[in-house]
Every structure is written in structure tokens, then in C-alpha cells.
Picture 1 (cartoon, rainbow, N blue to C red):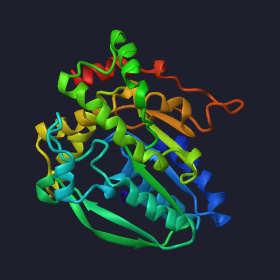
Picture 2: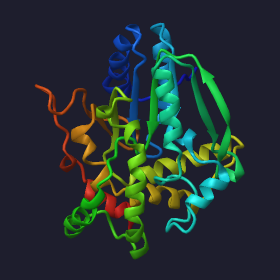
Picture 3: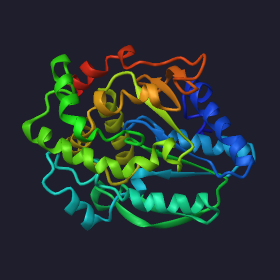
Length: 310
């Protein structure tokens, strides 16, 4: 019988999932209501991972709730308005398609001892475009919040200089003029997400990172996920729509500028391959004594981002 835990690669369970749960456990037992942010690209298996974590937590007598940045997508009409005219032709995914303030409010309320009431989003609605589908009240000793952009930091006025410095060395790939013109908009929208991924701001207790060994993998993973959803009779996106959605993640927040730096700054990080096996991990802050620093140069991040978006 396949369970959420057995569906995960053993190397990911032992090298990442169990340590993540162990970092939550003492905080939960002390009644501190821990909240961990989990960053990973689309298709990396974040949902499967947190379902496995929830099963692991239950065996230890802990109630672990799962929240997703996807559940905070704006309602359909608002989302379409917010995303109107974007260069990817998508109505969800980029910064600005969510309501991060809503998640911050709900999670702060829970951290202070209140009920945990989370919005929910069904990706199968509206022909695979998705829409809000109500709210859910959960009992939880701890929460894992997952999302592809959690922890990514707005570059603000430094964006043009950082982008220019990156371009000669493969950079974020061949972005079109329109995509480049929208980068400041995405970067500005990213500011509202900061409390959901930056432990220094006091809401989350840590940021854990799933990082692909190649940035061409998210498209492959997402196509596989849509094929599975189609086989099970759910609403699924076309291949073209999937490609546009994945490009929206890679070109709204180019990995060399926003994702690769998290390898050094996240509370913990794991690099995974195409089968979602853990190739290597760092389970302590990069500046901790004895911790291994995973550098972006360890993987072909810039060049593979370029090929993924080319």
C-alpha cells in the first residue's frame, strides 16, 4: 500500500523530511506553535513532502497542518485583473497573483493562540485554471507553509545593477523585452511575501529549501503532474499552458537572482535530482559552525536556467 511517506524517495525522507520534523517537534512540545516555510520549484514534490511530514508527525503524536501559498491565490476575477497583460499569458503563479496579507493575518492569529482558519484553492476548477473553494479550520500543533517563492527577497533599486551584472555570464536566460520590462513589477510585488519566508521578521521559525540540480526540471515535473491529473479525470492544463506557467516562475523571479542565493541563506537546504532524490543537504544555517555551505556554483544554475527558458 502506497502512503504519502512511502511515495517519497528514501534519501529525501532521511536527509530532509525527518530532520525538518525534528526541528519542529521541540517547539511544538513547548507549545510555541512553530511555523516553517518550505520553498521549492513547481513540481518538486512539496505537496507530497508535506503530506509525508504530516503522517510522520502523527506517529509522534503531533498535529501538523499544511498551508500553501497557492491557497492564497486571489479570487478569480481579482486574479485575472491583477495578472492582465502579463508577458506569460497566465492568471496565476507570479508575485501579485496571491493575497499574502491574508495568509500573514491568519497565521499570526494562530501563532497568538487563535484558531487556524486557512483559505483553500482547487486547481481543478475553471478547466485547470483554479479558483478559491472556501476555507478550512484546522487543529494544529505546528504548521508547514509551502510555496515556490517563499524566502525570495525583493532586490528593489538594486535590480537593474544585479540584472546587468548577471547577463554577460549567461544570466537569467533570453528574456524578451516585455519580460524584462515586467521584472520591476514582480520584484515590487514580492515585498508583500517577505513575512511568509523570512525568519528575521518573526512569523516563520525557519525557511527550508528544496533546490533542483537543474532548472530544466520544473517543466518536466509539471508536465508529469498534469498528465497524472488528467488520467484521474481532473481538470488539467494543456502542454502549452504548463510551459507558460513554468516560464512564469523562471522569468518573473530568475533563479540566479532570487532562488540560488537561498542555498546560502535558508535555515536548511537540499538539492534534488529529476527523481526527487536528495543529492546533498545542509541541515543548519550556513553560518553555523560545521555546517556545509551549498553554493549555486555546485549546480549549473545560471546556464540551466538559460536553457530552461530559451
